[in-house]
Length: 317
Image 1 (spheres, rainbow, N blue to C red):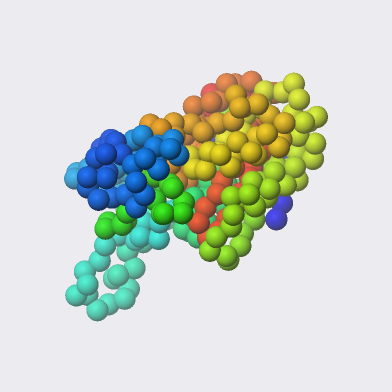
Image 2 (cartoon, one colour):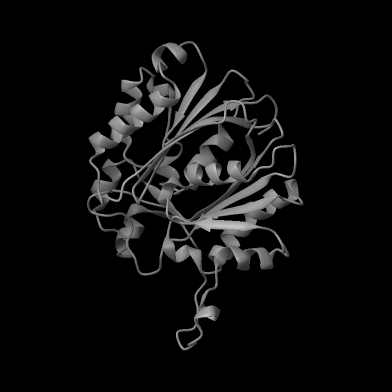
């Protein structure tokens, strides 16, 4: 599926994020029996540290920071879009002794909205796209915008690693961090202009990394038909999630781009921040150059692959 926004004047700005408080190295995680793979395997994939929630932190407190930042920038948003990569992050814990199914439906976004005294706003949420949630939120928010310059939509993603589960799988070699992030989608020319999105989904449990690389190249070429010519001489960065570095290196080579244009921001220091990865790197790398293009790649369990193309707008992000 491909969606073009070339003539729709959709912009994203106000990118904000918050990492959990506790920083741990691989040996600490191994000692706590939180790893499936060995320290050597994860170190070979490039990981060194991750961030986890401390004893005084919750999903609510982790998400409240970025959400509050967005609310200060947009006091009356048109709508709210929430995303979680883990299914467990969608609801707050309930009492097992409570037989009422309605009181067990403790949807996390509603609790967060009550916590920050935000009522009577349309809100939408999903975890189906996994770590491809950035593109998923962007598509949803763009569809919720009015035709005129009205109040924008706030997007928020937040996750805490499910209690009792290990980091990474034997096959995936992924280390994650607990994180929350937000951004604003509207008609005001600021930050980044959305030019297009492509999205691929499959119900298969697994696709090979070679297929992943090929599909990513195909999807980027659908948005930018001749990357080597269209991107030549332009200030172009391609943002990847902090997983599978060898796979994304293949994509970069196939597109005729240099390693310097390949962004995997902070993989050793903060690991993979799920749907927040794209928010973090875009927040850091906005230069204010209106000729700069950013290609953002998302990959999530499900399986979902999303690619969007953004053009910088002069001024602050």
